[in-house]
Image (tube, rainbow over all chains, first blue to last red; front, side, top):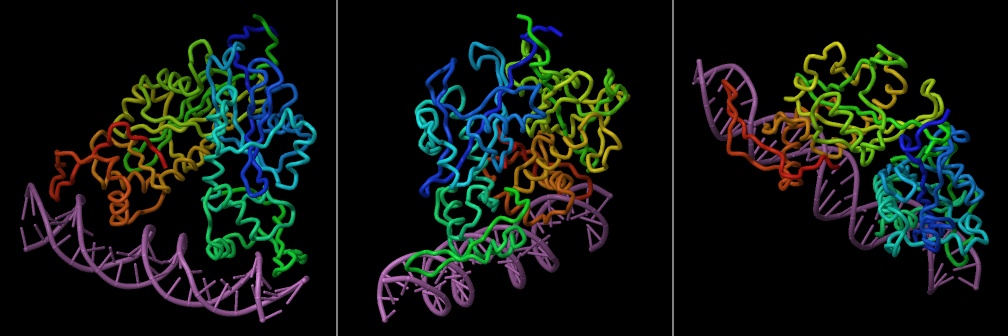
Length: 224
Length: 224
DNA sequence: TCAATAGTGTCTCTTAGACAATATTGA
DNA sequence: TCAATATTGTCTAAGAGACACTATTGA
């Protein structure tokens, strides 16, 4: 069936993928290879393919698999952007997703594409992101901070085994402020005793008391 | 320009419009007049018209203006639904909006279309809403309750002048539980002293102490 | 005065924050 | 033993909830 192009908007999915590198929050940016705005940095994203995708979420998964070659452990919708003049191609809808990546998979994610990918500081206003991606990144940051402030545990950003100090550090990095160790662990015990599982292994740590290792429980979700 | 229909999804906006009628929470439903699922009750909604709408939000405003003849004072995006088989028409995206209507405009909203519109109880699981609207309604309810629980004031559901008791009642109806009068007013004073303005007028009230009337400040937003 | 609702005060209990104290390891 | 970090305990302050009290009106 052939129809008028102007009656249907272009639909994109864009992803704000966060991780923590060296105790600093980072977001993945890609350098646009094609027009419009070729050469500019942007959030990774792609166009919806109704013939391949079962829904928008799976489109986001597909796009990120294409960019990084990995499946993201967490991907959630944040909001949409829309309007008639994203670029010359006309009316568009962009659905923004928030994603988390374990810190130990950051290097593998970028691989050798260091000219096309970068882990940028989301707090330092990126000089000029393409389109409205600066605003979208802000929305994703808000969502991430809100959830952690409401005690959602960003376990998807941590390696398979982690110490509570590591977990606390990740939360601090996301929130941009220090947390009290005692308060942090007290809440953990009270609320999330079923979502975190103790592990037999112990940490090395050199000249210091070894820390207990933990892991996320099966089916853990980044809720809150 | 003519293109393949299958490459572009249909885009709908659907609206969960809440109000309070006789101390009960209500959501607006419409009886579908056309196929598919003609005769079934559904959330009001319509198809995006890129040639008319400047973005998805304005599409939602346009659709509701068409159904009710009024401009909604509050409309916010909740989430999207998407997939290949909403109905025979193929791949679709549906963007859900949450809206609030003042209780004193409920009658005007329905007008004489009582066979096509109804104010239904969103808590009583509507037997069978069309499409996935039952799930969408649940998402909108969650959002509404979350915001009020986080102390967002649903002033958009109240008439221009209202008493604090009325405001508290609306919050109670949304949350489905009683609130403490003292706690409610204490918080109001502490947090929202700049967002609510005292009004000279007093309430009638018959055989009882008259209550102070309040109104929403200019530019008030349903945040929280 | 009374009924009825508006509006305020106070007590307690839970929880968050600050910070101290104890525990465990390798050198 | 010491340095360094893990883990726990304790005190205090802020906030939420429960509930009682006072205030104001028309009849």
